[in-house]
Image: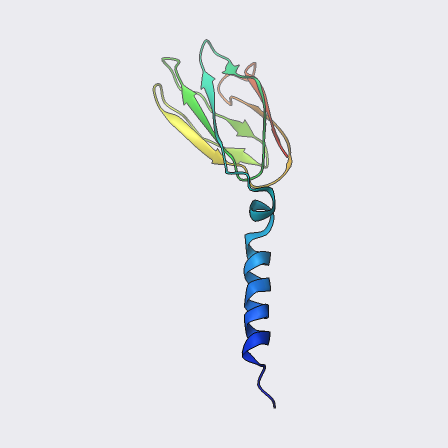
Length: 112
């Protein structure tokens, strides 16, 4: 069995590194953190569009707990008053979410 040349190994390593960096290196876009405020028994903004890799933080400004629940995708569980919960957007899609305690509260997170 012959050994690959150092040049071939260097090329293979460079290719593997470029592949591992993937779209982040191609787009040059840094991840962004977005905030959704829970206040007055509503999410603000109610509709949010983000990119994969971004983070969304829900901050509860109401004096009682809420949830951020997208069935089958994510569930914050109870977010107490003056607390927050964050979600790292990894999969593209449209996620409609509600508060499990107050089902009239609705929001939509779209991940591109």
